[in-house]
Length: 243
Length: 204
Image (cartoon, rainbow over all chains, first blue to last red; front, side, top):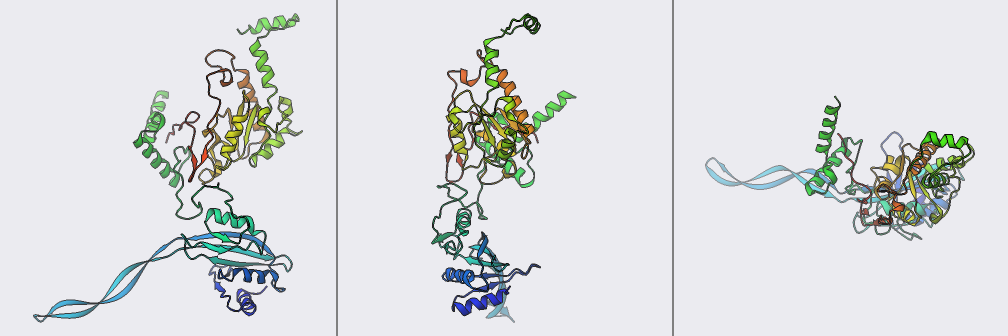
């Protein structure tokens, strides 16, 4: 099979200005991928499918990635004027100071497609597309017209990540219901607070269960004061009576 | 009035059958429990195996799986109840005629199982409808379902037709309609039916 560089060159030769980037994978697998520009994605996808040498006729998997907003701290050299007293004379002096500045790198959503060729027996070729941001510009072109198997998987990405695929024949939620507002696979998803009963809770779940019970006890809504503390007390009493 | 066991056997030897209406009624009911024909996940495969020749649920009078809730006596919650499916399960339960029973089969149906901490799975169907028998297992073997079934038969056999502990279907004042949860913007509303399920005491 062609390498990603060769595939990129083939795409550029067939569709000049497609602007395909290579996203390299530094791990041992070395499975590099191609990032397509959303404006050219459908044309490139059609080329990948129809090209005689590549013949990527099978879309095995489509999934999403959530890249949240990232706060980056970087050191910047700043020159400023400081009043200094040198030899008893006050004067302005230039001083260079290193300053730590925080910058928010905007996040985005990404759709990843894994392609194989059944006709030629090779693969996978990984292609990706990025949205502009995670809030209002989350549209990507749908690849369902190119690979029919993308239909349900793009619906799932729409459901769980909130990427809107334009050109999709039937874009509805797949796992969650109509009227559900969240996107559960996004990293900032807040789960419903219903960890009141976790018989074998540990670690993170135990923390959440205890927090939930504390909240309920404070609100006075817990049935029969079945909180953590009273539960422990009841257990001790029970043991005492048994002995 | 229960008849003395020894006297009953003695009379039986003489060719006299002594019984009570309650006993006869419950005997008839417990040996013709018709389950509803619906499966939710992989536990349904074990449920199907239970009804087939090798395990043969027909020995207990429960081979007639009815495709309509109107004709069914028993609801076997066989598998994961997703939050998308939960309102339909409660609605089906509401549509069943009394007397009706529920077996929650498998880890998912009783507690959410491996998906308990997920966003889309109900943490146990007993939050919305009363469950008679819980079976743990992932999935439970057909023997476990048969045992649950025998436990249910025992429960039916012990139900009194009169008195304060009579079952719901003989109590004219008992509420038979269970509120169907609504699919809200973030979760099912309400998260549980307090008339059916309260937070169990956890000893930590």
